[in-house]
Length: 70
Image (tube, rainbow, N blue to C red; front, side, top):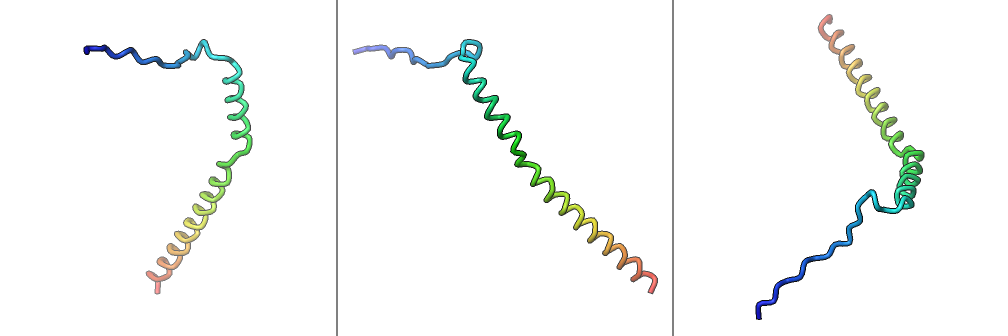
């Protein structure tokens, strides 16, 4: 009638007791992703955007300085 619940069992293995193979696999995967350099393309796009915005600011400045004189 009054049965107590059993404790839950977890399959946790502490980090210092794990196999080194898993760490090596993660390191090799991280190195391959890092060597591909996916983020370098995004930097180029942002540099191009900054150059375009700078060009627009210079053009606007040029137009406004000539507007005041005439």
